[in-house]
Length: 311
Image 1: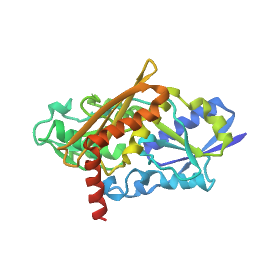
Image 2: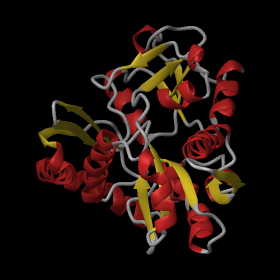
Image 3: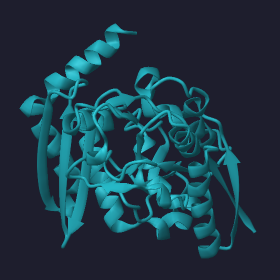
Image 4: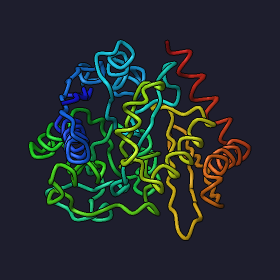
């Protein structure tokens, strides 16, 4: 029996994602899948916000090295953790149908964001979530929150926070959606680019793996990935800047909204774009170009300039 080696992080959510792909592959093909658990730098440094230590690439570099060195055949990522520039020779080949993209409001005491009393402490380490929270509720105290899903929920249960904001998809996948007090709609908090979508990365020349993975390429989801990652690539965005972007597809048309904000949550540049799904990539790029021209470039230049000067 042919064997497929799957590289993954060791968090509960990452393992669920890898096990999910493993089960689908074994059901579809006569193969044996083996999980190769890799501890990434992002898993080792838990007391510093990602924006200060190098961003989302901290969760994938060691895993990608396993692919490059032929120690694994594929890697399963949360697509929102994958940097825009992939190492030479690797490709994001498949994405199965995406899960719910929204953020979730999690609290033991309050039902919605609007219910929080003035001065309540909310936990998140996402700059995107922080600035959007600051816009709708400037009276809240927003504190950093790192760690896997269980760690974050434990800190909430210990009373360190009145509420925390998590990706809805992760809680649904871990069958912890009973912890969701309410779903935050994109109109109130625009999601991260590709939130809720999985990406399967392989070596570009691995025709065997392409054959195994073709059935997992969900067309609509991959159009969304093309649009949203093109948007983020054009903005040259990472964890260091508050960037949001979300697309929907209806009747062969893709519509995307994007936001770029400054770190204080005082300046927001928003725009929307739409067109045929066949033009998904160029629609994302054009949206980013519109935002850059409308003031987004000066916001990002200032953020990245400060980042350089602090190194």
